[in-house]
Length: 590
Image (cartoon, rainbow, N blue to C red; front, top):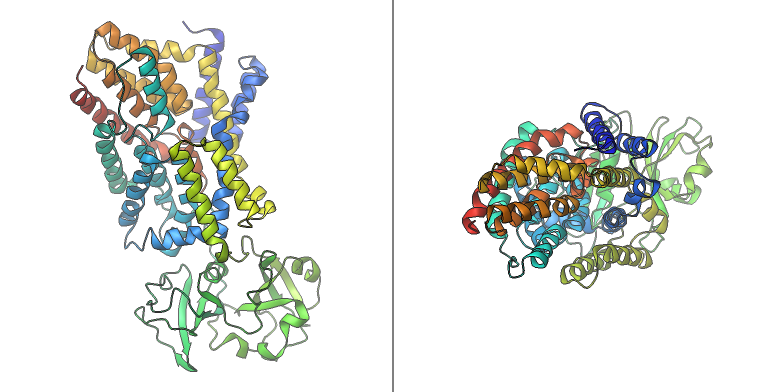
């Protein structure tokens, strides 16, 4: 029977789930509100309410945000999106090219760092190939989840359940790849179902950052550097053809102007590429490895680029250099900034930037030091001065060391030398110490909203355990199986997936394991099919964002609502459940 505290815990959790589905309130506000209510009712002690803040998984995710940001700022993310994910011709092909390798990686690696590494890469990849990012983030998480079900080391839950098997039934355990008999078919089904149905079940947005368009069109001139990896590649192969809101309009080669540029045109050393596009695309273009600003006034490579950013200014009628061409006005000497692009009333300006004359109302995109904005904010020369967020140059020269740190982090965890938390802390510290990311940027990179959601979810889930509600629910559902091994197996899957949707999958497995063990002994059948079903069910957390860490990690970047996970996650859970219950008794007979 349920106690009063158990009823209170169930009521508050149910209310939170309803609010998450139907309310537009932020999930962290809803879940933290639920924790506060349970604290006020006395269901949770202060220590239990704050337990999530000290949870190892939550802290690991927070530290991995720093590692992922360092990978982005050093160009590792761009390299992955360009060279690993390729250039798909459709969204469905993109989903396959993403999900298959991610599932393979997650079968032998912890899926949390895999997803943390891939989120910025997928965002960049979607932008380069004009793909809706919301069609890729949930598939990324689901691929990581099902990949972990293919091997014993795929998730910590598998290892814990196998360890409990050894403790209670010596001699009955699973080998490294035994789970693949069930995991591989389930992974194939999840990938196929997601690719086929995501067009109808997932939103088609480009995330929060791209929700509003930019009508300003800038002209920017880039130079192909000596020894650039782009030399010898076509425009299309170099990734310069399908840039979002950015078009290559002209090439200047040996003083010869090419106004019709074929995507098959081969790039050569010294080519000057003239693009037209919006401000965010100019930022992306400037970060291409092997391209640099073509204007002589631009900052030299030896300058300290860590404190540089992009700034937009609007020329006022009082600007002292009106009517003069840009190359003659010594803009850098006068203002400590370099003009890298220009926009004029949405017109597509012709010719090189250095040969243009400035007019009142022109919008300039400048590369400047961070003190430019406060120094020029009230200048009579400019009507408006505004810094562009996340516009510092990519530190390509540190790409190799950032990549080595990332690979080392993954390997030491896979080998078992360090826990995921320790490896993440070490990697984040090395990223800061080696200059891959500044300490200030590391602090800003942490998404505190996601961390609050994780911490609050852990506290709410803990209330089900501490009040005994979880055990009562589990025993009741399994009791409905009425002595049938197959029905009991299905009941074990159902109760485990229900718990893993609101508490951690590891906690769900630990709670249900003794019930599954007792059921197998009562039926006088092998525990192995029950253990495998328990492992699969604990990982089949597709239906809610709070059910699995990777779902929470893609929740914000994909700009999803809680109901988006319901639409595609519930049928996926049913598919995996049916496949598991049918296959497990065949491989491991009762």
